[in-house]
Image 1: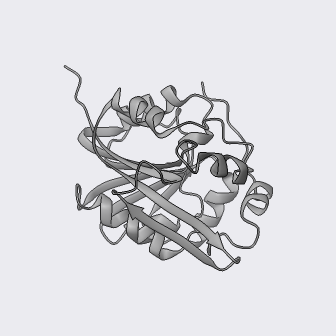
Image 2: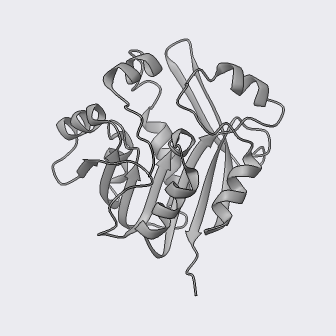
Image 3: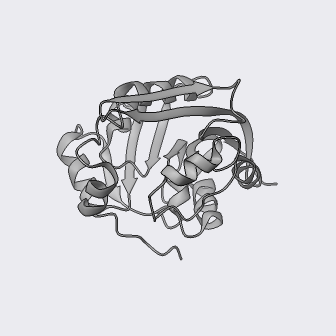
Length: 218
């Protein structure tokens, strides 16, 4: 069973300071949705690690949304700001209830925090419907900028500080990878957030998105 890390308000204040929304602007979520909707345009969505629900707010224009997060603080905040038809609940990747299956599971900058990645991916596999889509993002620590990512990453809850090949291998054990992109991202001057998706430079970017389809076991 995954050991839960308590992501309290203190964690969010330490990690983001007063800049949570500035570091998670609308254009970031829209760029994610543009890529995701190339492979799935509608259906049921589970956002694992939904935090304050900013992605859910954007995604609800296209999908029937549900969100979950390990942080009780984050879920309380999400409930207070999201429309009532978006269900959110406290839960951790690796031990989420499987009473319902989804057409799309998203997991943005979450899996690197897990204590057991295999358990988390197995849980996601069961949560997806046959031919369902998985979309994940994560930092990577290889390539010409890997050393800089490692220096700038002060988050002690990042248990998986791995190269991009590691993530591609782990995901491909359970899913068919249908696309992957690099992400250029940085927060400038406590005001501007760069989020640029790129296939051309995906081998050198400091972060990645993988899009994959559930492989049906026979």
